[in-house]
Image (cartoon, rainbow, N blue to C red):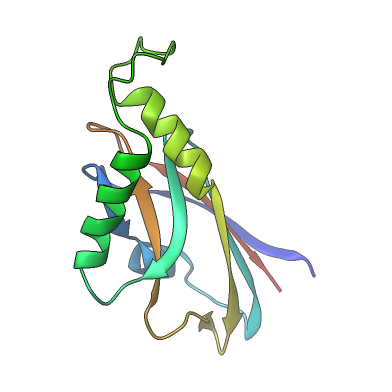
Length: 138
């Protein structure tokens, strides 16, 4: 396998939460190979990426609920607090979900399951647009 294309993608600023970014990724790759692999990497430490449910919006609310219970803001044990109460929790949450996802390519497009989508997991309250690196392997 070899990299046939590597593209940088600047996402718009999103509010805190889980945001479907599959359409942004699909639009950023003008020519898909017949088959291969897409690797998506985020260039930030307070947001992450995941592939998950894209049919029922209540799932996104539940993700936010669970992550906030697992990693609360204003924990007195945090020592990295200079950038606000959401910063250290954002780093921990990003570690839990990870900084990259991979997806097979088939028939010149992403081979996602019926209910799957690629999500930006934005863990900061006020973040600028996030930068992604898209690598297409064939």
